[in-house]
Amino acid sequence: MTKKILRRIAQALERMNPAPAPAPDFGSAAAFVWQPDPDRLVAVNTVNRVDIDLLVGVDRARDTLLANSAHFAKGLPANNALLWGARGMGKSSLVKAVHGALATDHPHLKIVEVQREDLPSIGRCLNMLRGAEERFILFCDDLSFGHDDAHYKSLKAVLDGGIEGRPDNVVLYATSNRRHLMPRDMIENERSSAISPSEAVEEKVSLSDRFGLWLGFHPCDQDEYLAMIRGYCAAYDIAISDETLRAEAIEWQATRGSRSGRVAWQYVTDLAGRRGVALS
Image 1: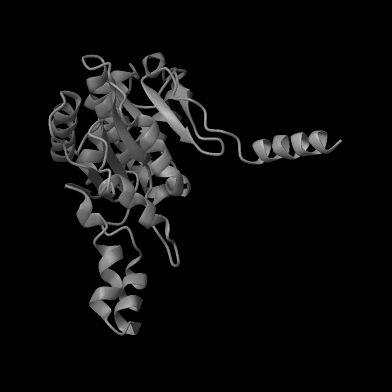
Image 2: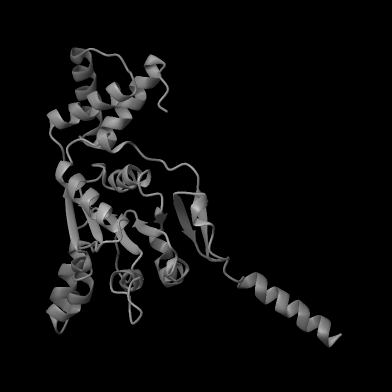
């Protein structure tokens, strides 16, 4: 009887804290998503991304990130990158598009998406990637930290690597609306209330300094906005005159109260639906 009870207790504990899954066959897909509890890398067969040539108005950031990623894919030194700035201007789209542009010639280059809330488990993810023949772009989208948020400490495992060091086959690309990853009011509050203001914010503000590349994204002007839409129309064979496109696109952005790559794509989606054109 005692053995049966102990066996049931052991089985219950295993269900509560299952063993991590073994590393997947990295040759089975170009992209993976990290999911903890239990730790595993889930293959993504089709990545949601646009062609890199369709990203308009981000030429400098595109060229810099593409060159850095090409170096990494070839086994050369490369920097972690923080893509920050205006919302909807293609930060996450650029990361995925750069990987897509290089994956054909470098099939060993993989992209692994990590959710911000899963950062405490990032060390276990690195252990699964460490030693693999493939090279991995670790991608964390919409990265930011609020009050009493200690997740930023877990991020240092990727940026600094601790005593083991960051695996040579891993580089981190993160996107954020904030350059310093923290709300400005939080930083100012720390400075005004701490006994040693500079030390109080140093650890949090300096987190972004650990990224070797800072790529800024700024709101687009009207010409860039219209060029984005025209590029999408050309890519998906949506016939529309320049006059109609201009009038409709400007009205569309006026109803949204902003211009961005995201707003441009939303207009194109509406236009394609009205014209009976599939976006595939």
